Length: 311
Image (cartoon, rainbow, N blue to C red; front, side, top):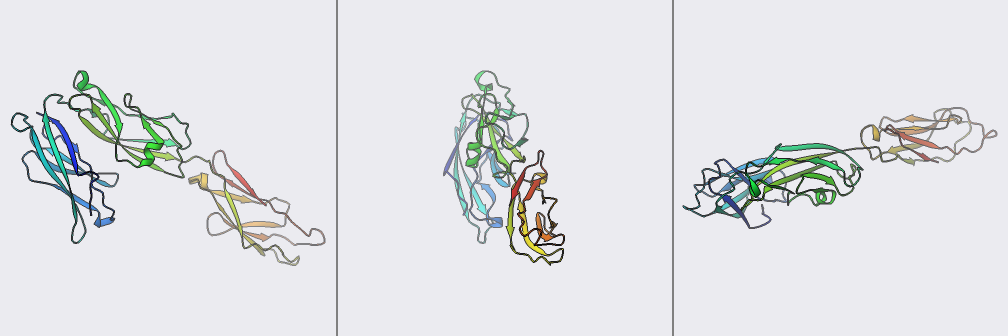
């Protein structure tokens, strides 16, 4: 069933905040998949707030939306109940208690320069590399217009190991190993908060797409080996099966195999990618040569290409 990380969430909202302003609420987690996961949210009946749900990173993110301006002198506290409902039969639900405290001042929220950011980043970049600099502005003056940045608190733990965000400049830098073969894409939530009392916070999404570089050599595997072949074998006689793998993607993962030119054997490509059959190419003569040590070379199509050898 849907379950919130915490049972309560608190918001400080300045009076006279304009109607339509959204406030992100923590989403519920449901271990079920597909239609049995969280399908929608609903809010208890009240005069001040509606519920709105947006899709982000294939998840449903709930927001409470102000219907009309708040007045602290009329009512200083609002208590809401958010319910997450899954798509099971029968449906199951979980609840979150929301408390809104109405305070004066700081009536402008920070605004990101983009609602969603996207950037490409090559794997294996050095620690300290700047990934992107996010920007936000605030129309307020003084501390109410000073902005601090932060990463979302409910991200994949791997994000915090690989990236760090400068709270003052908004620069996101690399702090750990970036490995395409480990993770191809990172989805981050970033926050901008002013220093007003209470602070106002907005959220934006950032997608970091990791670009593969040619950092893996091909791996050669020889199976179905026949160590003995008759000297009267016909050309095309099967000797062994060669399979080659490369953890890289695209051209970096495409591999070509070859043998020395001066041997009576050849590699025949299979109908499967990176599969070869080692077969005889010409007549064999034991009295001339009774033993061959074949070196198989596998080279990928990366720039620069990487090779490996197999005896």
